[in-house]
Image (cartoon, rainbow, N blue to C red; front, side, top):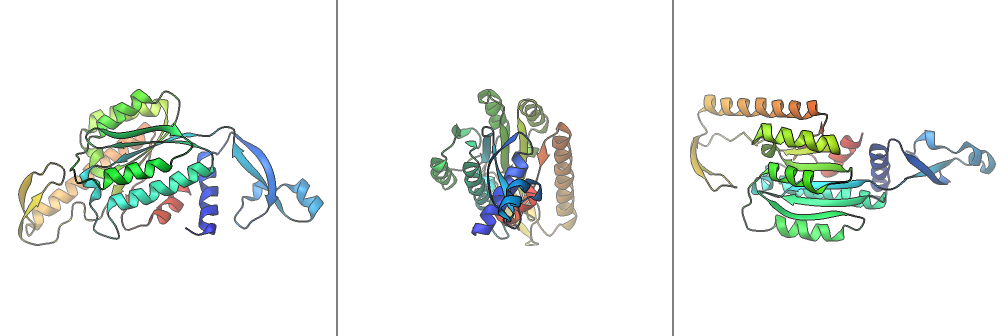
Length: 273
């Protein structure tokens, strides 16, 4: 990541997470891209050079990243697997949160809670733990309900919760998931970043093939040449996904899908803006 990218992302991060409730820290020389509303005209008039106010938060946010580490999130057919993109985004957000003095926590979940780190200001140990779980050979299933119940239980202070998961995690047990999300939203600021791949429900015409569910190891046959059936499956899934996305947004939760065709930087610039 270049210095310019780091600085711009850091500014976008502050603007996104600290729209109000900020205090002035000191002044510095103006740099292209700075918010003109932060220009300190008093110092500028004295020094004959544009100066802007540095801002900082009164305290830091408590930010909890909840990451799905199940087997299905390792899927990906374009530039990268879903988990690689999730890791890139997560590591970038870790660095930005540290720079902005936020306290960061991390929950890794599958069918159960794999690892939980309470909010803290030093997060170097998170990355090692995440890498270890992600590269484990054990096939882990997804149960988003377990993660949501756990967060509702352990988070006592108002926090920002950012959930990064596979899209399928949102569609299994929809009513129960929405109920837990509603409780979480009433106590915390919640955002969901579901990771999608254009080929999640699209298979090449290869005739009759045997498919194994990566999480359950269930084996079944699909006739990929049956275009009517394949089209019906794809349409049904897209409609169901659209429905649950709408239900989540109706609760008041921001949902921003991440596509594996994009890089972490492309997504974050779009997300913060």
